[in-house]
Every structure is written in C-alpha cells, then in structure tokens.
Image (tube, rainbow, N blue to C red; front, side, top):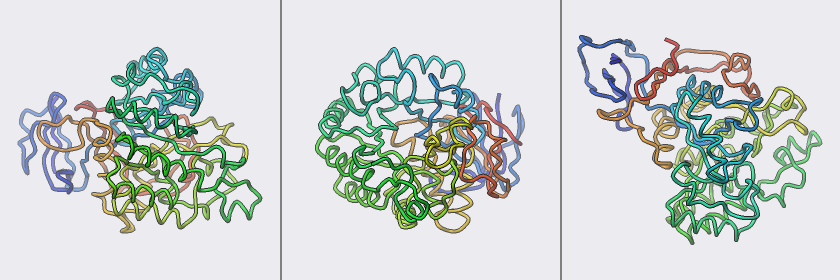
Length: 424
C-alpha cells in the first residue's frame, strides 16, 4: 500500500519543515513541498499541524516474558509502545530463563517473532544467571542475536569481573549497558536517602551506590576501549563523572528517564507508584540531569518501563516492587514539562528519543529522507489528555503521573510503512 502524508511538519536534518511524504513498499520514496495524490492508496492530511518524526526508540524496557507474563507480555508491552509512537524497543534480561546462552535467548526471541507489534531487540546478560557475580556469559555465542549485554536490575559487583566482560566485549565490538548499583552501599534502603526519607521514617538509598560503580566502570571502559552505556542515571555525581569521561574520550553514553527529569523526592507520596530503582533523587540531582540533557552529557531518554501487578504495587513504599510503567506517558510528560516550558527544544527531545538511541545501538533509521525505512510516528502536540492508567494498553498501571493533564498524543505509528497503531 502506498501512503501519502500531506502537509506534515516533518523532522529533517535536525529541524522541522512542511512537506508531503510518500511511503511505498516499506520505504520513504519521496519528500517534497507538494506531491500529487494521484495513485496513492491512502492520503493523510496533517493540516500543517501534525508533526512527523522518526519513530521513538526505547533502549530500556521490561517486557517480562518469558517468566513473568502476569506483569506484562511481549504482545501487551509492544502494543503499548506502538500506541506511544515507538517503533523499536530494547528488552532487558530480567527474565526466567535469563537470556545468558543461545538456548535461553531463543525462549524470548520465539515469542518476539510471534507476538511483537514493533521491533524488539533483546539484551543478553553479562553474567550467568544475571547474578552480577560469578562467571561471564559466552558473549561470542550470543552477540549476533542481541543488541548488547546487560545485567539490568543487578550491578556487576566485582571490578575484575566487569574488566573481563569489557575486554571480551571490546574485542567483539559489543556494547555493555550497565545497571550501576553497589550492593554493599544499599543497607536495606528503598527510596532516596534525602529529606523525604528522613521526615517519614524510611530507609534510604545513598547516591554513592550508583555513582561509585559508574566511576569504576568509566575507568575500565577507558582502559579497555569498550563501548559502555550507563542505564537510568539519577544523580548529580553520575552526570559529572560521565561528562568528564566523555571529555577524556571514553566511549561512554548514558540514559535517564522522564521521571528523573520531571520529579524529585519532594514530589514523593506514600504510594508504590513512586517507588523505582534508582529512586527519585533530590531537586539538585534533577536539575543536574536537566543540565546534562542540555549540554549533551545525557544522550538518551529511556523509560525503564517496568510493569508489575496491581498487588505488587499496592504495598506502600517499603514493600512494593521496584518499578513503574512509562511507555505511554514518556513523550507527553517530557513535551509538557520540558518543551512547553522552554527548558529544551522539541528538536532536542526528538534527538534523544528517536535519533541518538539508533546511533548508539546501531538501529536502522532515525531520519526522514528518501530511501529510509518508513519507521515513523505522527504527533498532535495540541491535543490534551489526562493520564488514566486503567486505559493503558500495558498490563502495568503504576505511574506517578496518574491524573496529570498532558499535551501531546501520538496519532499514527508506522513500522516499515505498515500501520501498527492509529488514532486518526
């Protein structure tokens, strides 16, 4: 089917321009100020108000399958992603079985091939059993079928083990995407060890438990030349360590999440929907992350979409499971709270959600140009809506943004020219 999108505000070369875009046989065939509608199977008129951008890519999602399908399935998680404008996600290895060998990985990829609405690129684990200790996996046996290697949910506790992993991945040209958390510094904490924690009698997680491993790993990446990506950074110190490492030429990139850029521990409530790992930090941490977004230290915004059952999230801050959902709110939250308020530009947000993830992880696309795959989404930035978790396509419902009025809604998602979500 040929699809002609007329009068769109199309993202081209880092900026937006009015254009008609013709899509045929999976690819963008033509871009022009005017394209005749004769011969097109379908025409969508954007009326000079809808923004056409490369589909979002989330490099950090938990699809929970195999092993935990009561929390989420690949079918439900990718449907939620497609609704939000994502055309690709990278799935984390917190699974049963953990994808630590080709056989265990196949248990996941078989479901992806059967049920995924969009592209899913799985991570393999760094250590056997995703224990953050013990032995490294056989990276060579898995590298062609994974996007990279991560023990997400568990920090690699031994510097010697991480050195071994980086040396092997550097030789293979693979990327390590690290959850950085020193277990010896957690001390039973479950929210940030700041003012809210002290005022309400909770046990806190110190910032050093995150940044200490980032500091260690940046030094190891510098030594080995390994491509090193840091998951969900949340602290001021983490931003500065990565900023300095980049200045030294270390092959390090990083991500943060929408919640870390728009919430801090001053916003906490006695509700499991405000519990995630890493936790919401202080206002100064949030401001440092925003500055990192502005100056390019922070490369990517990823959701860390982590669905749990209603029961698992109903047990308060101390006992609820760690993690919130984020796919269906990510862009509207960031657009409403950062773009509309003038903190960052729309172009910068698109770069962080659509372009840079593809560049870092080698995922095709990221440009609206002739000959590129038609992995696109269409946004109405004027549309307002209220966050109602019961309407999510994800099986997860826990979000700290419940009830908020947001701007921006995805109307159409195309994967290689095929419509995988539509709300026109």
